[in-house]
Image (cartoon, rainbow, N blue to C red; front, side):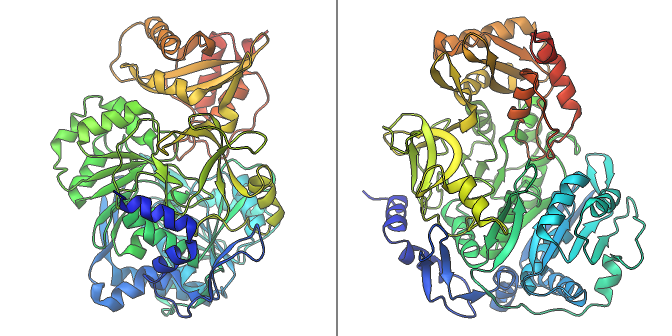
Length: 634
């Protein structure tokens, strides 16, 4: 019997115009499109050509006009400031229209860029939506990002206005943003005309006369601004991919295709209906924050939660359960690293038992590979489906997932399930030839990419071709390696540069990580290949132990080495592992494998712009020296 997923996936590939045209009917257009998919200028495909719309209108005004103005649109939950505040759709529309008036007063018009450098406060979402309202292009940079990285983004996006705040809060530490912003503007060759600063009570920023303006004072004298129709193909935002060097890669998102794909995804992938409470525990500085804190849930007419806190330490490892219980969250989306942190602090999930989680139906994980141990721990304790899914900054939404609104497939640990409708995922070898089911190769997507994905890079069409389209002509290169099994389940093993070559054998570090994570004492881990004179590369394992583990570390190391030998075989040449206090990560929770590898191989490396805590690199170097790597390499 054909299920809804099979039928949708088949139609999305055989007749994408009809499939996405039907999804587009769910939204409001000031002018209907003349063509759903324009492929006249390949490889630059465009969706809903000729159509005019406004993303902010569809996210806010439309719900108010349909009599849903009193429904809660956004809940701001901030354990770091002890604040919980709700905004109805009408209130959020009014605040957004007013801030759109502020931007208009500063001369911002359709097509101008506005850079947003904000902590996780409601005003960050308001600033984004206000840009969308008047057709300006927002570029959100993660709050607290280093000045030189912020400067490269200012130079590339050339914002007329920057919107920022006096500070952000990391657990208990107040991080002043204004000195970083001032320093970035000083470093940048392009200078914004004005900066609008939200003064937070924890610390006030001195304002530079003539350039800096106070958020409250400006909104007090502004008048609300109506939505400006824009072309479906006009840019909505630019989001710079993390860790870029030199020329930053500004991923562009259009208005029409983005709106259609995201609204469709809320029900199809996440099984979320209008009026449901949804929580994406991410940050507006990342793609997850754009797609699933701000745009998708509001386009769908849901209640979205904007959370200013951490999975542990604000105040404890029970904060996620408190938020789910208090706001009756139906589904949550976060990074596996958040659950690993909770599991490490509270391995028996004792804090979970203090809360009523009866409204909670599904947990979605993405951001990096979800190890089976974390999924199983979450399943066991939450007693709901735990769904891993796979996507990227560039794609804007999921490439592969268990589409819970279409059909709930059995979970296979280590797989984000199947390609989402719209996505033609294939596995190719280095000669661009398809490989057999179950064989590892490069995971690619046959063009055209579905709506909502990047149409190009900001002012850099050639860079877009070079980075994503040239290696496998006719396909988008995900830069992930993996395989597809006989049942169509996709397995994302690792980034293509994480496939290591051990004495001529191509091995996945992701498969080894899965085995280490299976050990009962391991909270989280990373495996990467380091240079070896004899074998080319050999794998090294790093493990963070669960809280309260007192067994000798050598015993645990011995056990995981044996586990890899038993499950992959001696061919893996996995002989070395070490226990570390913590792993170096980006602020979004990705382990900085490439940087660890450079330290291990005693090569020069650049401090990644997205690193959460630079001190972790020193700790890593120390651990590597003890096992004869890094500076202790002869």
